[in-house]
Amino acid sequence: MRNFLQFIWNNQFTLLFFLLEFIGFALLTTNNGFHNSKIQTASTSISGNVADIRDSYAQYLGLKEENEKLLEENKRLKERISLREGKNRNQKLPFIYQTAHAINSTYSLGNNFLILDKGASEGVTAQQAVVGPQGIIGVVHSVSDHYSTVMPIIHSQSTVSCKLKKNNYFGLLKWRGNDDRLAVLEDIPNHIGVFTGDTIVTRGGEGIFPSNILVGKAVSSEKNEATGFQAVTVELATDFRKVYNVYVLENKAKPEVDSLIQIMAE
Amino acid sequence: MNRELISHIVRFVLLIGVQVFLLNNVHFSGMINPYIYLYFLLVLPVDFSPNAGLLLAFVLGLTIDLFSHTLGMHTIASVFFAYGRPYILRYMAPRDGYEFTRTISIRQMGWLWFLTFSTIMIFLHHFVLFFIETFRMSGLGFTFGKSIGSTAITLFLIVIIQLLFTRPPKSSLGYE
Image 1: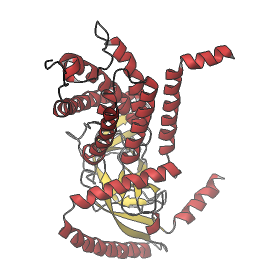
Image 2: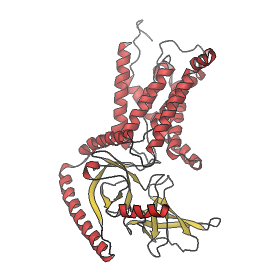
Image 3: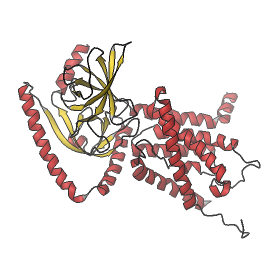
Image 4: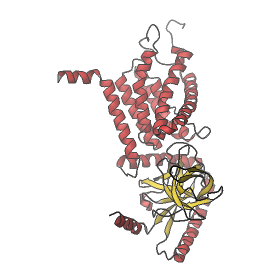
């Protein structure tokens, strides 16, 4: 016992180091994945407030109101389109669009994020889709009362089910972490011809995104003879360096889709 | 001593402010991010308790994490920085050892010593940080390059801070 205590005393510096690093890694791992832990919510709230203060100074005052009007009008129009498309496909519950601003965003990190100025009190919840005027952006990751964070396509853990518009072959869109304009669509069979300029759109499989939202255009394709699948490099339609006006999409049918998937899994 | 404590606290708050409000929004050529808050840990006195250094690094890293939504990353890198610091200091000790009250600054330690020490320490921190960020062995070369670029920018900013904010020591003898 004496020796043990002596050991701890002699190595207090290293032991303290390991303890603190352990806490650090614990924080890091709870941060990834879809958790809404308390510290996560606190972090979202703090960084949201910081971004809000900065944003209020950075923005032209006159333009703000004008943009707001246009955004509201867009929202109404998009909802009507969504309703129309829903009718055509006998889809009873369309997507509900909500406008938001990306008050902070990064594009140069390995794991990028966006902070939106809408949160739980405006009805935003985790796992809702976020799209911009140019194309898809990402999925809501965590929410506090008035802010929410988004895991964009350009995050190392982001995966979105996408398809080739011309023939509906689908695969998973991932990001390799080194260029905010390029992502990779995996799991497309080798025998499918993919050409530069082919349009990639969302598949809408998980019940998060509507189908046929623009993702980007194919740039090149790398065939892997060993697996039989090719990886298509996609130039993203969204420019993450100037994301600002976005829409958060709530799928009224998601619980229904989820329960069906649940039944299949059991 | 009291005045020194106050200047440490002021430095702590100012550096966090600059980091969060200004530098987190700066991306040189899209890839390179400077992390100026390290300056606080870098210039702690030589005889500062290593344990207290670890705890301070933890608090500093956690604060930056909370503000920039990168929970855990800066904490891990900063604590690693504070752990390595006493060893590097011992390794780089001048022939006569450190004078007891010596602070770490260009004026006290000279250009060559300060630049070498800062480069090693900053690179250690940045490499750990970017490594955790990418978390893949395949991207090691990329992480390495990004660390070198960011180290250069951070070092540049730290030297500017040094030259701007450290006064020459007041000598009671009237000369230096």
